[in-house]
Image (cartoon, rainbow, N blue to C red; front, side):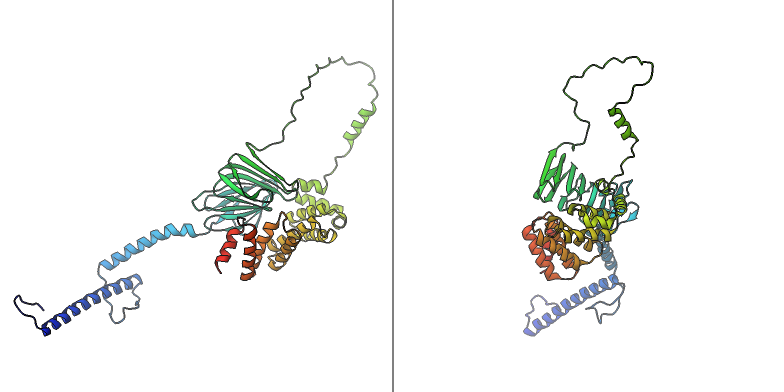
Length: 433
């Protein structure tokens, strides 16, 4: 309805004008609602959408499919950007697909490559043993139990890699290094080629930075560590003597006649040369990281007799040889003997820790593992394995479904080790309260 210029609108005409305007606005709203319904219907493949009841089917206009195509393209781009960053890393061990939590052992005669989907690569030296404990979109946590590995870690803005080595944690963002650990000698060696890392653990403190070109060596038994610059030390020939070199004596012509009688010294040398070569003992073979051969030698000597009379240190060595050669029942026998025969000693406490680790890693018996880790912490609250034992208790309780117990252990852990390898996990548990 229109008003003609010069007309004097009455109240009825104004009311009629308001009704017309309201009707036009309602029609526009209806058109918008129909357009929205057509768009949703085309996006859902023709399914009815809430709020569109009673409108009836209608052919979508050309703009609805175009809008849908644009939206689909935008979603596809968004997925391509987001999905790779949110997907956990995968990895391959040699030519086989790797599994988180599975032990990885290199053969005695060749290294073993481990390749991750982000380009990170590891190489286990011969006889080395490791395990990928966890993996997410940012990186992974790798446990090196024994031996040496070489790593080249791909760096991104959010990458986080942790290498657990005995009681030590090596935090890496992107770098190239060699890392080794001897559980028998309790010695750590880190040679950093590129980048930087932070090492935490006994003797070195909470977060000790190691830069490219530096070598960190930690000797737990000797309670000392060394951080040096340059190439790592290597055994070489002894330095030349400073004494003057005497001129060589002239060679006399060979005399005719019978050979001179052998002296006592020459007879002893000849006897030693004819003597059979001594076979290496099981201890020698453990020191050489030849664990299968060490167990063969121990069994030949009489494993049960060894366990009954061996020293505490030898029992731990026997247990290492048994664990690394795949004989967990023999390892448990040696560790249990250390607990009973040398109660109250540091070796007995270490035996408790190793019994807990075997229960956790090999049998997935988390209640038993928690008990042994608790025994270790009760006997050695400041020991070299205390940080890992308390972190493992968090994992035990979480895997047993005890959320409150895991949070309680997480609080204890963060109070003592705020920058430890389990700190991120502990914080995430406390954030869930």
